[in-house]
Amino acid sequence: MADSEELENMVLSFRVSELQMLLGFAGRNKSGRKNELQGRALELLRLRSHPAIRLKIRELYKTIQADQMAAHQMYGQTGSSSEPQIDQNMHNRNYYSTRQAISQQQQQQASISAGKELTPAHQASIPQPPRTKQLVGPTTGAQLWDTSVASQRTANTAYNPYQYPTKVLQTPLHIQPTSQYPIHPDVKLKKLPFFDLLSELLKPSSLMPQGSMRLQENTFLFHLTPQQATDIASSRDCRTGSKMDYVVQVQMRFCLQETSCEQEDFFPPNIGVKVNGKLCPLPNPIPTNKPSVEPKRPPRPVNISPLVKLSPTVGNEIRVTWSADYGRRYAIAVYLVRKLTSAELLTRLKNRGPRHSDYTRGLIKEKLNEDADSEIATTSLRVSLACPLGKMRMCTPCRASTCSHLQCFDASLFLQMNERKPTWNCPVCDKPALYDNLVIDGYFQEVLNSNKLLPDVNEIQLLQDGSWENLVLKKEKDKEKTETKAPDESRDNKIDVDTVDLDETNPTPAPKEKKRAVIIDLISDSDDDDEDNTPTQSTKKPASGISSPKKPQTSSISSTSESPEYMIIDLE
Image 1 (cartoon, rainbow, N blue to C red):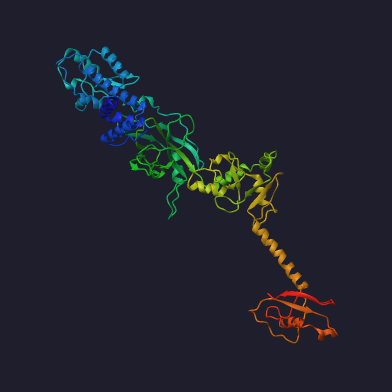
Image 2: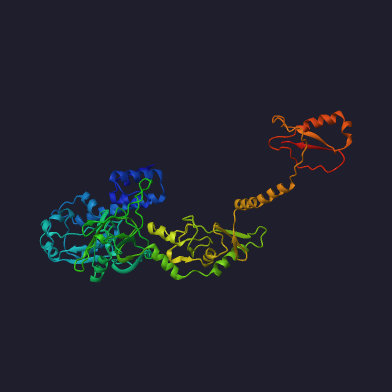
């Protein structure tokens, strides 16, 4: 319990820089006022009392104590009454150093016979010294000392604020010193398929933070040659009613300062750009629903051609403002590029030539024969000839060489989609499908150009030997069967139906309500008609009334036998 209270007191004594370092170490939001930062730090200590966080708090607290010790050693170690009294809070606001900085300052003070320095509060009123000497240290950066003033201070110990030299504020802990930032880092940005690189106007340059402020600012300059200015001006689309666009563009790109691999476009947080004093429009930030998370801008290059001075005698100035981010470095680069269209990329893709059909045929055999030893083996594959993007039959089937599936997509639709919104992901497996990895499939191109392919079929079946056949749906097969059976059935009905006249004397139709099976006595025409029994006559009476509008005196029974025979006829 006492340990927690001690840590809370340490957190309450932290400055804004220490609070930002602590929250950045824990992965929390570092923006806001001091009271908000203190509230987050205390909440972090109470809810997530991790040993690493406790050690970080103690480490930052020791840094504050080291700053106070440095201030006393620099201003009050001799105890001279003529020396000005230094406000401790002033040191807390203006001096940031480590223990290595303290030891180096002691060595510098031992080599200089001067007494003590003036506080930074008087720096604004002191004029710039005429003669300076630069002493560079490994951790404290450049410090400026006036040698003439230092020699005068040995003879005169009276306090005179104008005799004390200026001192450059040391770099805070959470921002690396400027000397550690390379001016032109060895950074390579990824190639953009829709742009041809013509020349490099500004090499990748570091965004160097200066001082302890979170909001930083840097300025960069670049010039155009006469030929470059002419190319840009002549490529402008000046048609009435059309948006002013350039085919040859001046393109600005930002990225992380990483040299391990090619970098994608990446904007620093809270970035703002002015080109020749005019605000440059940037891609709109992507909104997010996560609390305390800064929205990011989509990674795209920025066309600054309308803001550039197309003159070889006048330089172009780019002023960049951004928020310094702990642990991340950023770089800026400016290129002269030529914009391409999806039709031009499709032409280049076709000029490479299709991949041979035997390659895809071998993949088909491999996929269908790899399960040959198992009990359940794949004997065929179904592949669609419709593009998953446009849902229509493909014209130029292609896929990425890095994909393992056989399904292709239409190259023209894929390039048009990425021209509007460059994602470069395969529409089948959603894996990266870069333009340089796209290949036209010769096997499916032969299928689309084959006379064997039916016009209404959009699916084919791949067989084990690498061949293919049309895949007709079951409904279509049933429809074809019914169409072939219909004329046969009508022909059979015409052959089998005979008309038999059962009774010519009583053609009155039977009532429709009485639907029943009637027994009819079919006898030959003989002289025994008078000797018939009464039941026989009763059966003939309903038989005499067998005629309906639907089946008028027709039957499929022909009477050829001479012996009496009883049959049951269903009138329904």
